[in-house]
Image (cartoon, rainbow, N blue to C red):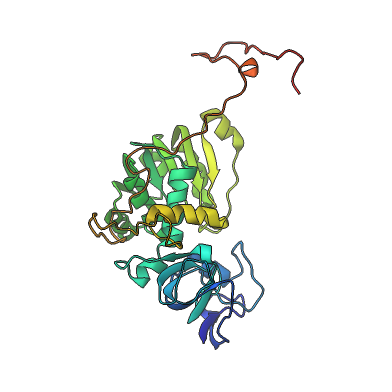
Length: 342
């Protein structure tokens, strides 16, 4: 089979087209690849700058879409299924393998190209805003790199989950038009964005990092959250934690693709599924308008109505629970249970 292979760390122009044996894996899903997603990590991998550094030579490609050629028994997948999958590596080839729990049946209305570009961008955006960022109805979201894959997905997810305003930060007017087409309410240029926006943002989505990081903290209002997604600027910023303390803001890491459970949880919201016996109401449901993923509409989810996931009802035993005050007292009383703490 033909494959794209990174044989040296001399940049994207140094990749090679090679012939390799077709993959065999009894415990994995073998996919006849029809489309593969290309993202910034692959560019970094050609220079050895990505966090994951496989031994040379290797085939890059983290997300694909295609047709199942073989699947393990009990996986819920069958030969001929149209699927998208996270391969993490090896996707830039005519055949690729993926773990069954990272492979998802595509709705008939979704093309291979859409499927190959959906998982990482929209999965990351959903996990960032809904779970890690705890986005609330009516909040203001600022998105860096708003014309990129993560940026446009974050704009759409923020709007779908109730953001009151989405501000797109871009480096050019042309990129601003891309952000507007994705649904941004307003667009600002990165140069001087702090002064333009002011201190009124609840959630910052930052896949860029670099020099703008400190100014991103400065636009957060109290209780604001800065979501760290990536470092396309090339440098990893450092946090002066006194800024967090003085302003009551948070810096939150977003590592959606690290565990299959996170991927499965997001796929459940999008309606894709690797298990035919689950509640896989393949998106879009038959009763809903069939809107492509490339528009502002997104899959429905358990939280789209404004309901939030159930929180734990656990609380400490009454004898060690501190009293609540409407206003913080000058000195906080200490309540110690009989016999002391253990």
